[in-house]
Image: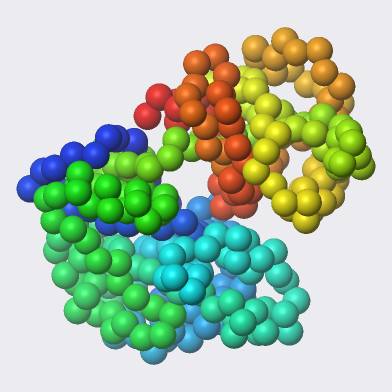
Length: 312
């Protein structure tokens, strides 16, 4: 299976050798088109069954005999902006009737930005702009299937416009870049907010209005094979979110395990390091300053949450 090409981080810049695209708040998805259509997420999980409207759209819009496509599954709100909370609702549903119902109530769109293979030909070593041209020639935009547009050269102005809209950020891509199945400096993410993906290590018991739920989550990230403590996050949820998360965490309860730099004397319910969450924050020194919970990341493995991510 193809591993998706990933980005390093950068600040906004202008460069005529680069293009700039929206950084979409969705689920990264590789689509395999052959005798059947398969949608595979970053964890290499086949979740085709969850999005019947996208399977139908790819059948209708893809002109080739076979291919491998790269893009992001997104649900747009009434203002035309990505709504990750609605997408998370879709990601948790397994019942066939509910899937069919939600595909009409909360339809998703597959936003394509690359093509890796066409009719058995490997396109990964062709330059990005040629791949985009091939993508446009072989995909017809239909309902629930579109091709992501780009801005040429002027990344700074584009970033400012995106930031004003409250969108996650932009991605810069070098025009002559090949498609490599790893993190590469050919592609750079430029975030409007500082965010990091962390492993949830456990939680403190809730008090007052949060009694029976939790007070804060303990966060960590890997440095080589060791988990390092990054601090606690205690804001960013609705009560409904907290109830769902508490149920998930309680299935993973375990004894305390070794975590580097953990020196707080707290009452903690430890859980197995299997859940990943995204948090936004002001700055990072030894620990996260003013972190706020954004979402759970079911598409990312705990081992992908590293201290290097803060440095990138």
